[in-house]
Image (tube, rainbow, N blue to C red):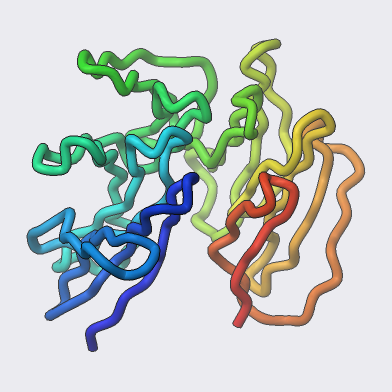
Length: 238
């Protein structure tokens, strides 16, 4: 079954990158918003899905898994594609990664324990940063980094610990337990995440206080994305 999915729009509204699956392989393609000038960006025996553009639209974060893998999440890897050098190899950035809002770096984790930062300049230097777990997302101003963490002896579940790291004060706060977390707004900052196997949307302050569960019909919820300049969240439910 051939199909197209996972569209990502550049901030200037001029270009869309999406996944196109054909013969069991899924590659990244780009096109103008009117559907013209379609170009294949990635190749090979892979399953590629775009995640997000950097704020300057020069880099694209995407997820890749081999076609032969069993269990997409077990073998997923993150990569950064340079949009102005599409003929060059994508840059591997661990298992999970998050682009910094300043468009100059990406934070990633190889093992779900240590956090690293890769500079997206010609040198591509990397260094370890404070914190643990794997990156989920930044606040729009880059002050807060959300991370997920699962203790080594904990059984695997969809939910995990959610932490917020204040990159200015260099302190961490445990937000709660859940998955698919996002930061909304700025000063005040809020965190929205899902909880449970029949996910319930939850909203809390960045401090982890005043948790509020949002009333919503039963059904699996996934793929949350910020809209309206980070003031609202769009997600799928089925």
